[in-house]
Length: 329
Image (cartoon, rainbow, N blue to C red; front, side, top):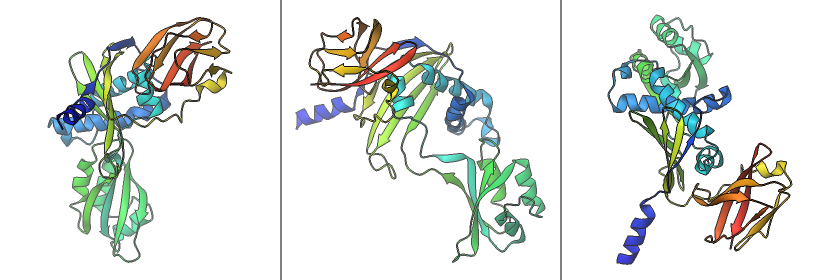
């Protein structure tokens, strides 16, 4: 009984590796910025309400808050020399999931009202001065309309021009005569998350990947922790939690080169057929823990004493990152 309890405690304690710190950059292409902008805006808005800041009364999310987190998220994304970066940015593609939308919400009202008839036609010029003033002030458009055949009400989904503190507009609309209620447009489930803490010299980011009945509350979860300093350097501090299921869907880099690992599975050594130059390599598990690193000469990596399992072998070849799946017996 005591032994089982101690084992449970050990499995749930943080599993930290020796910290790895690399220089990165806090800029990225517009498509990557867009990929993380909503995460940054969500975290900024959460912090405003959590700390009861004055900006909770503002519809616009202050860029000074969201940009700090966005730069940190981009720095982690760009830290490609860290294997744990691939776990959170590539293999599991972790973003914030299971939260209220920051750019859409729903209004429920009597479908026979003249201004509601206009909205049902996606027309924001409703003829109701109060409604029109609110929609214009917050740059709201109609995203979707749902009118159940059995009900007298209609559901209108509004969309804002940019991510915003939608509660401000919602509070004004819910006071309109004929409105039943207004509510956030939710992404259901608890899925993946990113949490931030801001310090005087760095931003702490904790990514988590959840699985197992995430429509209610994920049964299992894995965490990865990074510190991003204001010079855009990234420090990986380790991972903990449940062993996440391996997702090899996005490990396709090898197809651009004709590399083959043999024997695979291996015991104490293996060779990389087709590797014609010396390369610096890392051998990690899918959570980013490094088990072996060094220089591979002649395509041979030996002196391996690894627990049985699947690993990622990564190295740079002719300016391209190569990742190979290998298995230890």
